[in-house]
Length: 186
Image (cartoon, rainbow, N blue to C red; front, side, top):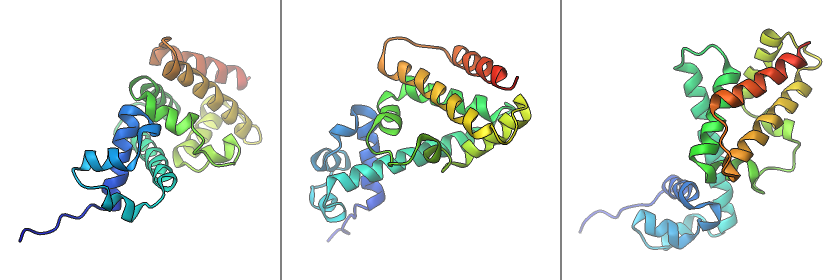
């Protein structure tokens, strides 16, 4: 008898992530995941009896993958600005993976925290705040507010990219953000 193939929780989350990327989080369901994995619905239901729980895990996985993508690019890049790297990764996500951008930034899976509290969970955002102090001479008492406003600006532009036919290039997005930050540092 051939060995029984197990469908792990991680496999299910990755399959849900793939569906969310291709079709949107609303299309993540037990049957779609089973089809993607080539299994019955039983392994999915045994690990995730509740689809809301599964979608929450897909959301967390998408956030973690984005953070890792930014971190990897920082580590492997000759670019000096963590801010510029982060902004271009977000713009690329909004442009090339609209459904994932919408899941991460425009869905109800975000916690009830403020935007700033949500952003501060991620190490790259703390690194950006340090860069704002050094690169734009923003004093440490003001950096959180400037970071919040600039982040909302970036996400506003990326939302336009993800939800409309308008397409700002990475260079245009960086210019808008850097000009605004230069003004904030004055």
